[in-house]
Length: 107
Image (spheres, rainbow, N blue to C red):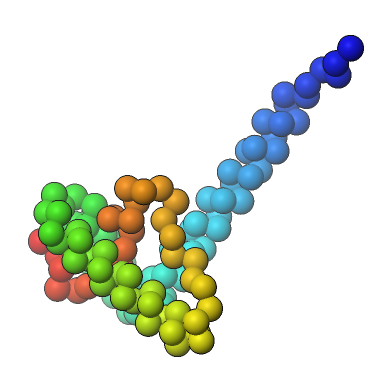
């Protein structure tokens, strides 16, 4: 006879893993803000720039931001002596909206 599965324990484990992943994501986003120098901006400007990035429909602009973000990570990786970075997005569509913005890229 098979042992009954403890769904409550499995659910609790998944909930804890979800919380840990969300905390890691928050920490990495904060690290990214500091690494790009965006922490020098006031919070309203930073929020406005991020909102503009999310709302833009201009594919060419998003591709430019992505290219700038990739270059940022290549330079950072080279400065660390070729260590692999952790800048991969969690989903294929995320890479267009999660790249760092340049100050003049606001629409």
